[in-house]
Image (cartoon, rainbow, N blue to C red; front, top):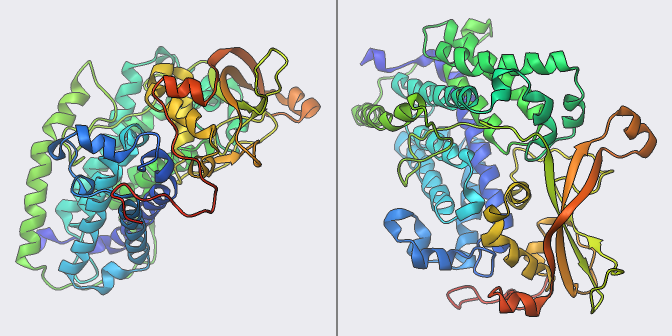
Length: 498
């Protein structure tokens, strides 16, 4: 089938696959480095407790078959190693069926992690990585020309990501319709980056231009991705430019970089005047063509649900319609907060808490804390605790399942939990009490920055968590894991093996 092959897109496929493998690598590294405190057998939301109450059919994955911290680590580090190999070109060095198997293994491993990740993995970019990763299984390698049907599926995915986000904004917060949302967004977004302060202080007319440009790039440009060349290539370039703007203005894990990788599937390098030499390919195996066409048919059928969601007046964001996270609906920032509320966590070594007690603040890596600390760039790496702390400031109910377990682990200086933080004010022994206070944060202006050196100004609002000690948490049913020293021998895994 001559129409099946699209050899002119070989460079686009190469770049998309290598970027996707790099983002898989980032996801697996984040899982390997953070899981013990978050979902490990001694974590805040342990996997064994989750799999005991949620059956396999509702959250398919390897950890329903077996769980131990060591096994989870093997899955995460194994996925990272395979991802790194694919970044280095392993997929093109192997036969086609073996290359496809490598991509399928990556998808299955990461699906296993996401499906037991609970609140920590409740982000749209997890489903986006899984959906894109599943399509990548059928993109082929250097032995075959890029399959045109799968390239169109990638375009369809980018369209849903962008168009869904545009619709949710248009239907959501009124500030998107009156073009004022960007007055607040750079300051109140979940995790500002090092340039967010400067973006926030752009003149108001430029903020209106940002908002208007957002509507154009998310409601009109995505249509161009589905049109013939060269329109699709130009639309892809606009998507890439928009995503780079978002990369510069904040931290959104791998959402922007993954969207860039997918947009490349619509770009024909020759249309941009790049000196790309054509490659000659033989006919693709019939079994490969059959699988790609079956995939295309399945995606078309499953697209009914996200399309119905997009045309609905009750559109929802970032939802998977099946447990395999295939053909999802996407969207972001349907509403924008006007103020920023941050939870500040503190501890004390004093045995009795009085109004004169001296409290020491814990420092987080990414979320605002110290007012003099310029926000850092972490994306595409995902700081899961920091992101959830933003939600905690908006809704205490959202943090209820994990916040008290978090406090309990601070009270024993749990090393796995402390590794998620930038600064532990109690290096020589755990605190006797911890508390949390809700603060109102805002960016300083130019005059305040020059006078104080502070990027933020904060005002205490009210007590978020009253001072608690281990006894109080135990009475509430939140017993911390057994205390141990950082660097010491680890506790036995959940299955009892060391």
